[in-house]
Length: 125
Image (cartoon, rainbow, N blue to C red; front, side, top):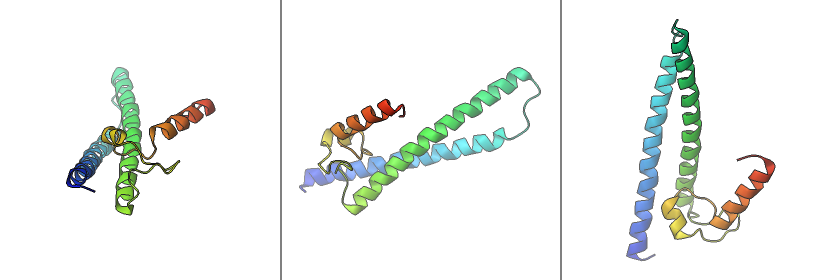
């Protein structure tokens, strides 16, 4: 690995770590909001509807953030194991441009598209 590649590799690791820290901070805020939400509902029905809707939004955000966090942590483990940038499905190198955009990617574009098509046929995502 030449100096330029090492710098790019280091920057990618730092991006993953920063994003991980951001997500952990946001998840903590969601948990704090959810704890506060366990208080009795407001007696006003309109306010109750807003509170319940907010709870649903927090639940979705929590799920999305947790999935991204899992992907980032898996990427950091692949870096430690020396398998970062290798497609989990076909074993070929993941395109550098893909990793620039999605450093947590574990599949090359072709394998990810095949996976998404299969999930779509099965009715999942």
